[in-house]
Amino acid sequence: IKTPLNVILGHAELLGGQFGHQEDPMERLSSLQCIRKNIDQIVQLVTDFLAVSKLETVELRKVMGLVQMNDIVREVAAQQRVTADDKNQTITLDLDKELKLVMGDHDQLQRALGNLVSNAIKFTPPSGSIRIKSRMAKESVSIEVTDTGPGIPKKDLPSLFSQFKRLNGSSNTEGTGLGLFIVKTIVEAHNGHVAVDSDKGAGTTFKILIPASKEYWTKTDPYLGHKGLERETPTEHAA
Image 1 (cartoon, rainbow, N blue to C red):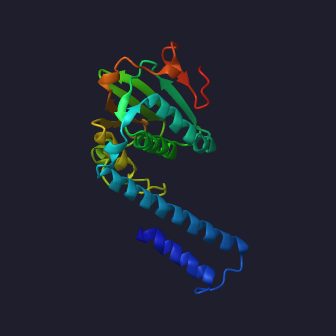
Image 2 (cartoon, rainbow, N blue to C red):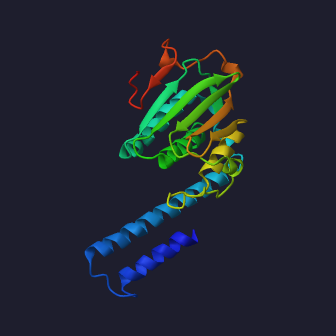
Image 3 (spheres, rainbow, N blue to C red):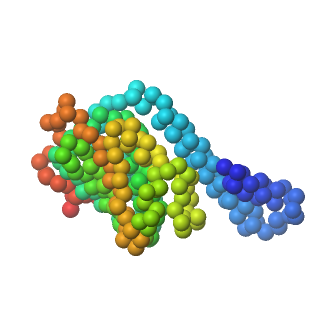
């Protein structure tokens, strides 16, 4: 948090005239935009810290309920659509109508998947694509997020979910280094597992596995009816 605060202080002093006046209106605007960007970064960092703090308490168990992960996939895709459109990226959904319910915290599971999709958009170049796939994997629900980004070197994969982990070459990409740690913490709090498959130049696939709720084993996703596997865009138009 020290780095963005120092940037804010520096630009505030420039605007205040301590290091000379900024006569050019565009320079003043640039300083204001830089201050706003770094404030947003601090807000995100504090938000992530609070999320981690909550996950380390018993609060998660208080809001457990039956969750259909296909619903969360649709919600996250809709939330991220504008950001993807800004980069001319395509988000494709590949959903399984036989997907069972899981017992979990809807908001936290949405945060975990949202972090993965946000990362995919962030590291995928313009005109790239992101696919979110749901399947049953034995007695677990599997959600995969695959992108066409630059990939991650194999040597970096073991430490990828550590706190404050930033990949080499990501210094120009905004982030707190807590996103994947939060994903791992949320998934493990649901007795699940998160994995990654990637290599440099080959794109990346993150997979979340969460045990299905056996009490409601026969209940599937009513939204998909009898259409089998549904391949759709965030606008819900089946291919």
